[in-house]
Length: 240
Image 1 (cartoon, rainbow, N blue to C red):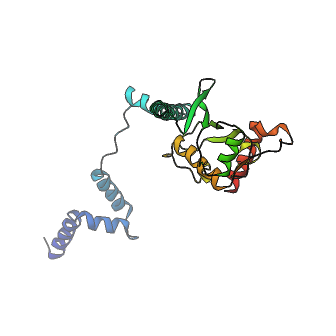
Image 2: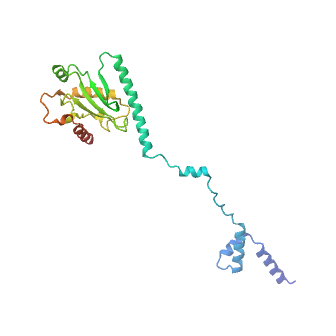
C-alpha cells in the first residue's frame, strides 16, 4: 500500500470516529453534505431524552375536590348573622345582670317585639346638674327613650340610634330624633364598642351639646317617624 493510500485510510478512520460535538458543528455548517446531516440527525435522535409520559386520569377524590366550590354569599351572611347574635346575646345578658344588681340602674333595656336586633333603651340618669336633667324633673319625665337597631354586619358596623321621647332640641339631636355622634359613624366606630359604651357616650354628648326638652310642640308629626331619622342619620354619616 502506498503512502497516499495509507493517508486516505487514516483520514477515513478519523472522520468515522469523530466526537459528537464535531459532528454537530459540521452538520450545522453550510458545507455539511446531506449524507452527513442525515447521520447527524440519526445520532441526535438516538440520544434525545425520552418524551414526557402522558398525563394520568385524575382520581375520583381529586375530581370531587376540583368540582367543589367555595362558600357563596349565603355562607357569608350566615356567619355574619351568627356573630351578631352571639355578640348581642352576650351584651344583653351582661346588661340584665347589671340591672339586677342595681336598685337604681343608669339605663335599662327592652327588646322590641322580642326581636334581639331591635332594642328600646331607657336612659334614667344623666348629669343632675345639667339643664336637661332640670327639664326632665320639671316636666316629670322619668327617662329618655332610645331606639337602637343593629345591622346585619354588627359589631363591625355601628347600630342606628335615635331618640323617641321626649323631643330634645340641641344636644346633637336632629329632627326625627337622629343623633349626631362620631361614635355612630363607620369612621368613628370600632367593633370593641359595647351598647353600654354607646348609651353612656350619648348621655355625655346630649349634656355637652346643651340639649333641652322642647317646650314647643313639633310642627309636624315627623318627629317620631323612623324614616326621617334614618335619612338624617345617613346624611350625617356621609358628611363625617
